Length: 226
Image (cartoon, rainbow, N blue to C red):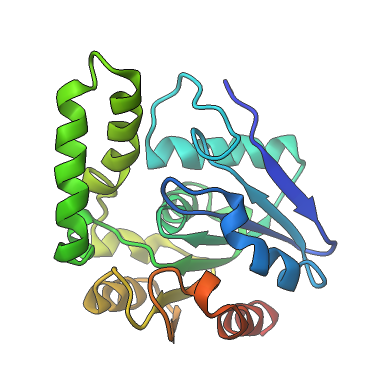
């Protein structure tokens, strides 16, 4: 692989990998790292081109990020792990679960979507406007190009059909805030499409893990320890 990830590795026990959202970094999970590390080996990483992990030369796509995770786990000799993904991290986790099901113990999808239309239109429209504006200057300006790449993850990806999720075999918890930017019916669709999955709606916005960590962490731990 053309990059090495920045990551935190703390605690002991079964491995729990945390995947952050778009244009963010592992620090988003600081309240989860503190809460989960007494029970698990918690590994939180900056995905390609995020935080302190370099962009590298590979494609800047969710599928590539899932491939990066595969190599990252091999480097750390992690044979199997619980995976918690938030937002784009959840979308990476879906891609990973579909290709590498044997590497996952339990799967937690927080605020994920399987196609761009799953995002509330009032949220998505400004993202699209900023993306197309950045694309106008992407060929001549590195900063605009980087911005377009980042926004493009939300404008152009992901693209799964509900029936694709039927192939997910890991025990799965689907999560969202009760005022999430992911449409409630879209979160319900993801839950309904994954065989045997559980659903947890936590009071808060899309960023419920940061806003309501006590209730969020309790729901995650209850699922993992069941």
